[in-house]
Length: 243
Image (cartoon, one colour):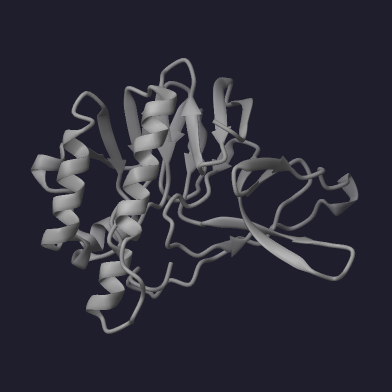
């Protein structure tokens, strides 16, 4: 695979992947956040004309990741499904066929806000649902960024991105991994997801993703240390907005 950064998170050897995923190398556990299966069908069911096919694209990307990493466990950090419309027959047919092709992979969903509205995976999907924090050695796997005593947290929910500026006053917004002390926030995996610009602090590591490459941003100077404002994503109060 192109675009891989090997590092430590909470003392655990991980690989950050340009495919917007994280691999626990020794445990062979693949972690992704915010897939939002069925978001395209949800929008169309609600009268918003958007292209079809993003669920199939995301399943194909997961196929390639599982094959490349040889992971034995796949953990979704919440928001596997976008809304209850994601459980329509066509989306479920795609998911069942994909799951059958990876019957030997243990799959876990750490329940997120969208999952609670959408409903749990069908039993034939064989995806175990866990509450956050889901402990895995020194790590706590969560959907919402938070602090967990005695653990380093892996989380999603924020769809983090960073804006980079060029010398010609041009700019580009890129998804990123956001590594803070005791907290690592993964980019949204889903192809049809938005992003929220992060407010990083001194000491944070930010690894931007540009197509199939990873680029670590220079650290902020110590003088930039100050209050950190929490980024948000455009969700409605019921969790059914555009995130």
